[in-house]
Image 1 (cartoon, helix red, strand yellow):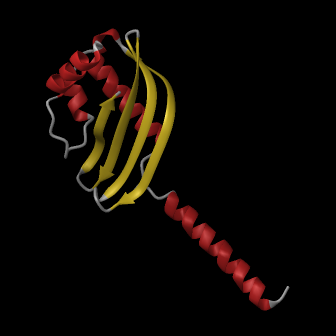
Image 2 (cartoon, rainbow, N blue to C red):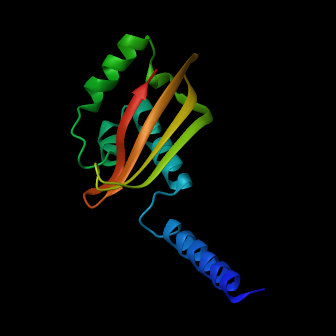
Length: 140
């Protein structure tokens, strides 16, 4: 093997190692951690524990949860008090660093049942210098 190819392969291995280190840094959002956050949030909404649910929101999000979920329930003809069951996750979108939020974002799409009604829920979780938590939630 000539020296040029050997140098190229060594450089390639070092680059791959550095990229894997960057991807595993603590600044990102862990999938399991995000799933637990969303499950805890939906459980708090189902029991109308809006105080607890608010602690799971990102600090930059200023929203009246009781009012917002009341509007969702009226628009979709659902009742979160009947329970929320996540049936399956259908999509994940991860951004290690976004300049628009100044940190990491993790968006998950899931099929769920609210009572007996099937819905699609899209939740974005954000971690930046201002905190960590649910940044948006949309029910389809």
